[in-house]
Amino acid sequence: MNSTLKGAIIGAVAALLAAGVSAYPAYEQYRLAEEQARQAEAEKQRAQRQVEHYRQTFQNAAVQYTRGLGSLIIKAEEGDVVTNAKALVASRNDLRSSLESIGSRLDTEIDALEAELKKPNPNPAKVKQLLEIIKQKWPLKEQQIEVEVRKMLAEMGLTLEDSPAPPSGLSSTVN
Image (tube, rainbow, N blue to C red; front, side, top):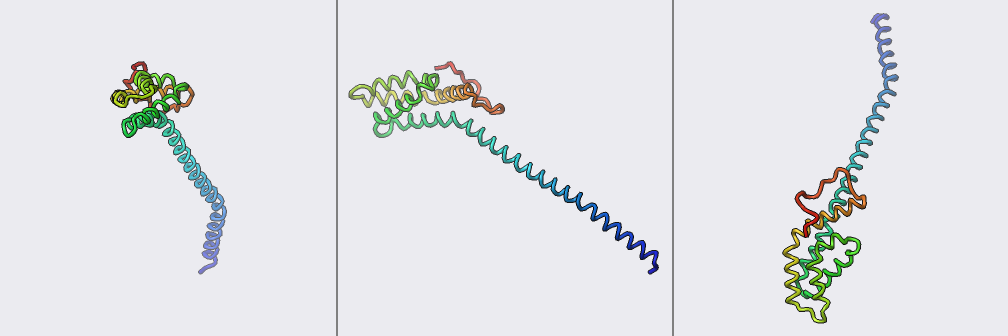
């Protein structure tokens, strides 16, 4: 091999090595930036999951309240109706002061039930009749109460800008 060719090959190898050595820091910077971007994306996804968790918690608050009350209404006719009805009235009364507009959705029927239960010997047949009336009216009342709870939460500033609106067509003034 002639010395010129050897020199050219050595020069080319040296140039490639020099290029590789000078390119390595740039590659490391690229790799580091790529890793930071992956970490930022993972953090963004974690934050989005957390926001979704809070949104679901917020959305379910009204439903959980109304379902709990609905469960007491349905259970009230089973077993000892007087005791179960007292539990229903007590549950409503516990929340009455802070949820007056919501409680007003149930006042007529539950007040009659409460009056019957305050008698020295409540009539189980009358209690059962009142519970049946409450049960029949519950589906519409449940929706109305959900709307009222959502309004109360909004008044307390517990809203998410992009949370879905309550079902349309429900009037908050219907009793």
